[in-house]
Amino acid sequence: MVSVAERKEYILTRLGEQGLKALKDFGINVDSAITQILQKQAIHQIGLEVKAESGDVNNMITSELVYKSASPEDAYGQEFKRRLQGICFTDEQISSLYQIEQIILSVDENLSEHRKQPWVRRYFIMPNSTPQTIPEKEFLTLSELVLISDDANSAFWRDCDALPNQAWAALCIAACCAPYTEGKYANHFNERTQKFGWSKAQNYAYVRNECLLTERLKWGMHEKPAWIPETCDLKQYQR
Image (tube, rainbow, N blue to C red; front, side):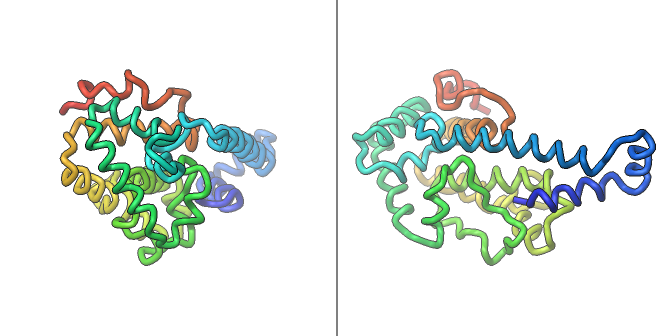
């Protein structure tokens, strides 16, 4: 994620000399105004962080439930089961996926520290990212494959002019929102779920519900809940 100072510099650059002069001519203290805007955004982000850290299972990403779970029978395991039942998985499929996700989580590829924080708030594409440092797709859980794609897609529009060349190259590998982006992780998500025998509707429903969580708790776009009957109804995802 781009720092506040970098974002401020980016805004000033985009305004340009003419824009800055026009605002100053109107008596607006541009530096102070931008600082206030960024401060308001920071306060809003703190509020989202508090929600994400509340320990409410409704605010947790689905693979995170497996990460926190010690048994399929505990509260996290039961919420994992409830969600997948909502998109028409059998008990056998749910049990199998729980075990697969646990195996992936057991492989520590420099991800363990990142997994300790609320997953819905995680960032994967940073100013110091490079194509060599972004995670290997095989070592990410299903939800992490969605999260890194979502993070890259957001950064594609938000930070396109502020990221260094190597970070931009990493972003274009991870993002799936433009014809020239590789969609490495989204493609692997589709390949993996296809091997698991998921229907396309189940695939779309899983991704959409995970993104509803990031939209609410990471990006502050809305207050809509995720993983409820209305958002799990497969009819709306059949294409």
